[in-house]
Image (cartoon, rainbow, N blue to C red; front, side, top):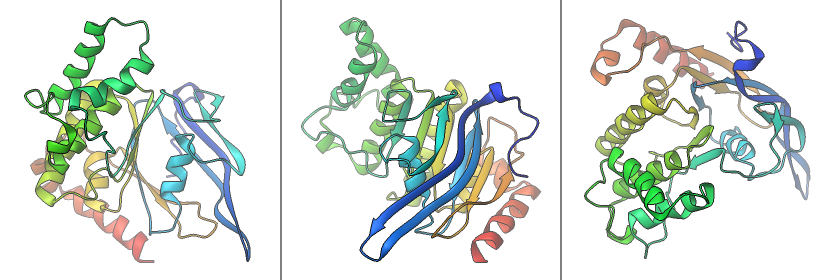
Length: 264
């Protein structure tokens, strides 16, 4: 399957058409992405996988408006993306918190910008709500420097959801965490996402994570001149329970499909 052909254009939140990214080098232009076509639907959770250097993070930073487009366009709700904005919340591999600020103050920074008309109490309530959702209700007054790596990433998740973005962009947010913390935070992310239903795009190297979280897994060809190589629909119902999915017969079919793609 390639695009979700049954969806009307109204359902398309993000439309990438002929998307190209070129970096000039002393030896000539290096084409990272070439004529990439992809549509992301409203309230969809998409995982993007591919080998290192295939342009996954480049693609994500272009959607975020942090990386210039060399050719083609990215339309968000039919408007061209031309720079960063609060309609796209980003969760990076490292949450990049201000270490001297508390968890609450770190989340508050962005929320103040997005909701300038809100009262101090309203702003604090928004931040506290999402910090509570990620399990930091009792730690929101702790300074970032006093939080573990996993707790800092929880603050990063709370911060992104608190902005109430149209799209959530996740750049390997659990890549630096141990397997137990990773599983916990995947569950936290899904629990909030199931309630908020924000369109989400995640970059990951982890095949199991891609299957567990996503409605579709987008497979990118190796660079240079990377494109969409294949798209796999994940048919598990939501909300999802890890144990049920691991015991589902389709799980290993999906897994084999993705690993076969990556190995060729």
